[in-house]
Length: 224
Image 1 (cartoon, rainbow, N blue to C red):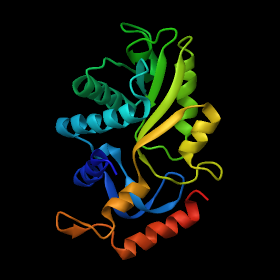
Image 2: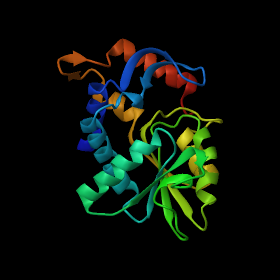
Image 3: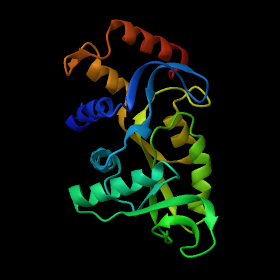
């Protein structure tokens, strides 16, 4: 596993973004782990998060695209942080763009924030965590309404590796349904691999009991 992935897993724990215990997802699934990106709250944390996204984007897509699009609201700081990191780490200028929930009719009018999209632009979408892929259904029409642009990919922070609407993972369904290449900074399999029975800051985070609970969860909701 790449070094940046190992560092990102520990970074999520330090930021209390990745937690283990008893939780219920929006879809009503009882889960032993939860990813809450709302706990990235400081400038330092956002800067580091942007760097991890930048590395995942470079590894999957290179920089053969023009715009990084972050759906409102959580995607707004993600797209800003990631495009800044791409500039700092790789010297590449990728434009950032997000949507508003409400169309603005004065000043900087319209539904978009950041860079306007231009014909022939290739667009990569950035999100926090995708479980069912419902937000993509809302995001793609907004992008395609901007002209002759091509959404080519989706990057998320964590691939939960559970079924979407059918028998495949949510990211696999998105790729199949919409033709988007998808990637994540880390998968839950990589999280378990890195943390299982391995001490971090003097503590075993995933012990045998928690590992059994995670395995049981994937037996029920994982990709078959």
